[in-house]
Image (cartoon, rainbow over all chains, first blue to last red; front, top):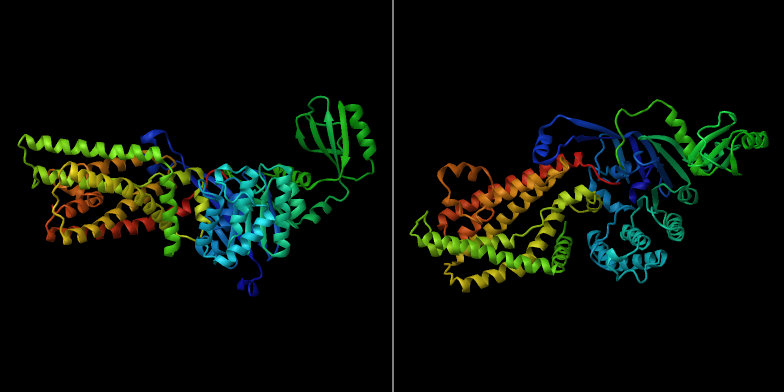
Length: 347
Length: 264
């Protein structure tokens, strides 16, 4: 990309806002016709005010709970959605104003839906994409050899897309997004629903793509292992706003002395008022994750208190994972006054 | 969009239609059924000595066959846009460096090309022999007719495109589709040639594009319209192609700001 010589960043988002107005539609013919003229509208604040810059060759994780605005941001950067406010640029192109121009420079993978032609063999989908992106036969063959090896596509190319397993389909989808060798790759939950081995294969391919080809990658995921293993930078989103943006390592250093205690109780425990030094950060049935802020000092005492005062079945002490840190960040912002007036959009 | 990409989209859509064999046989049967019903209807009416407009029993049968064959050949999948908005798969169309309008047009042409070749043409040939049709095909009629067919096709495509884009505003588009089918059946000319309508219908015919979809090309092809009249009709069609084109562009630009991608 020639732009990189003059542009500081590959992806720029400045004060991005996306508000959806949804007409409340009634049932049936009358309801649908009424909805056309109705003033009954519901406003959904999907993205409130988001700014970040991503440089060439970065591998950034874009993290947030369902409805936090991750997919909406990705869709504005890929030119599918038009922002309600703010500006975005990808390779110096404003995606929603020059959607087609932008799409030549980017690859996009939506984990939840395929971009391949459902009824056709994988190879034919790739051939259609070759024509669409005007890739020469020679370049295409070179790309395919590389992608086929990296993603293990042998034996899949002749199969119709509908017959592929989820993991196979995802590998093909990733290959499809890279046929035109884009400078930027957007991955929207590419590991969703995959088993450990399939995830690992995809991760190692992406790691190499970023390291060797210098492809700038934005990855949204719910799997913090994806982030820990791949992304040097993590952007955390909550309720349409960025609540953290920085190197993934630093996030861990933010809580250097923290210990996380994973506890199995005999029965469900709502709160631990008698052990205030252990802060509950997550609960899942009888399981609870507690944070001890002062490192090892006083930890043994706190655990002793916990075990004597509450029905502890089992417990283990560990270093905080990115997931738990992210979760504790959410808990903190949840305690603040609500930012949004409206509901959150489904991603 | 260059012609290779356009051709590719059309070819894929054509290929896809081939795979639905049962649908195909049912559709052929359906086409014949319609032609039998309408030709029988017109013949029965004229056997009673009725005389309507400037049609004879023979010319009206010819018109009915040609209009129905055009309708069959203009088969379009008019549910895809709304479906793609509804399930969010429109997102995968929009990440491509292709115009949404042109991509839909290419796919539509592939779809219709299949139905023309597999249903329209065989039904036409079969009907010509079966009904001993004597259609006065002239070189000029064919040339004007071909032009009229192209414009009629574009008008129908853009009509479907615009009704599809309604999905950007409302989730439930089926009621609008029903309204469209009703108007198309009544005013399109595939069932009743529009010059048989009483005078009070004229404003509806003039102010809406429907008559230029099946009636105009059919009337020109079977020589029902004089060459002078045909030229005027072609001019009117061209105006409608322009209006529908402008409406499609405006609707797309307004709609893309409103687009909501469903389901992630």
